[in-house]
Length: 79
Image (tube, rainbow, N blue to C red; front, side, top):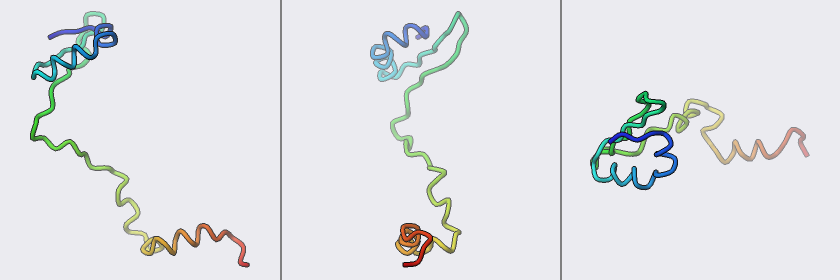
């Protein structure tokens, strides 16, 4: 199926019904193919790796998270 950007804007629900039935939808803008909407495979994993998870695992000062946060909250002055 082909649909224009305007069709996508105003008829998204009906276009997504085509995709739910397993059809591929090509989106055009001013006569040029711009995008393709394809159905996701049923068995394909949908969870993508988050690049921010574990980004500070190699820091020694954050091994004990509670102590690190307490140090941040304590501030600069010693009372």
